[in-house]
View (cartoon, one colour):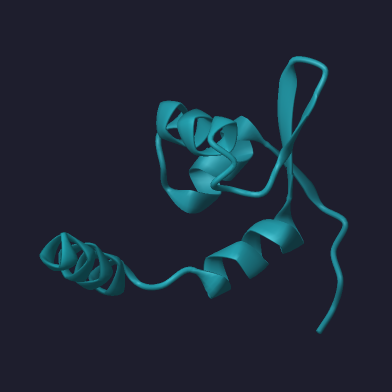
Length: 73
């Protein structure tokens, strides 16, 4: 698999993920998307984001897991 050192800004990653910038900021600040602050600005390695996306369960699986957790309570 080719390796890319491409670094994305918050604007570029929001467009790539088709998310609003505010949603992406919240995910980044919560540590839910791989990235780091450089000074005042967030930066994201595209390869790291792609790997993160591949590890994430699909939306339907998230809902199933959450519903299952609530049933245990």
